[in-house]
Length: 265
Image (cartoon, rainbow, N blue to C red; front, side, top):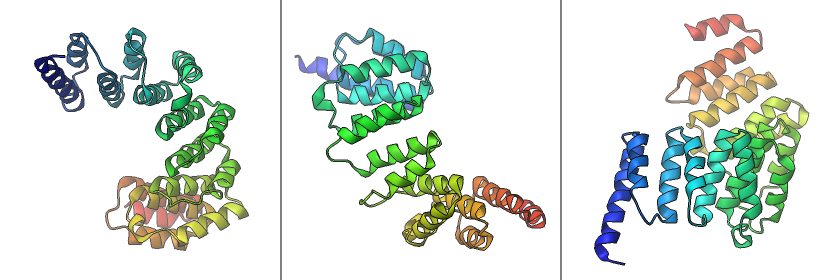
């Protein structure tokens, strides 16, 4: 293949990426993409990701329908993401067809399988997501996170905690936030015990993460442990409107209306 062809292709890829990611100009990016004669799997992945980022997941499926090459594992992961975002009849049909036809050697790729799990959970097809999860030989924390998040999204909070208790890996900030959310929704003795234990052992560097801290505040307020929620709130260096909202909502939920008004002001 001539070196100038490769050079031009790389330049076009860079322009498409810049056009989509920085300028958010979908029409021009699509026009540039259509001008490429021999599109690679990588180029499709770049385009798919850019369209998803720009809230144009439907266009991802349109491009996929025109695709003349077999999707690789990166294409599949991104397509599963697009289907999860869309979550309509077309997305369900496309996503499940892709999953059925997925080569066996891709099924132990954690990135692809995690994207498939996330998609199926969004579809409400928990059983299929569980099957994929069980088939993965070397599960990582991202895969566990997708399952726990999926259970919570489908309001299966006990299952979320069951799976959480099976994790023997270093926890991510996402896991902390999701489990605090599950405990807040359940708000029973088991949830209180798990939530408080998790909070007690949470690494210091996560305590200034507004998403985690807000989830913890919400959970503690649901437990009626206002004092602990106030301590976390007081320790946050840079509070945002979501954090304030969680505190105000918590005060109201605990019928502490004066405190809610004081904080609101």
